[in-house]
Length: 95
Image (tube, rainbow, N blue to C red):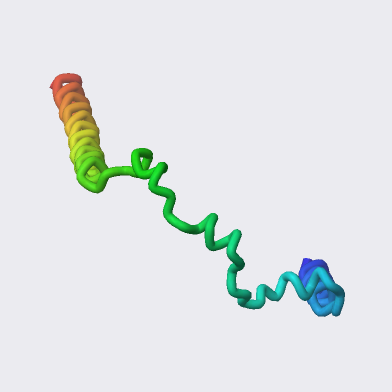
């Protein structure tokens, strides 16, 4: 098993140390974006209506947290009720 690990690691290093054009593109040199890239990254005002509003997002997050607490409390309650019913059934069976 260790042999396979060593051979795969060694082959990986051999592949990445080649001086071909593919390995040069993987090095990810920082290049200033051109005009087209800047235009694509610029904020588009026509897409403003599709963005989430902060108040709405916060309300949904708060609702999610409340529902999570309610579900967990309900599950704990059900587990407790079943445990108490089981104990009562055992006590009645012994008596």
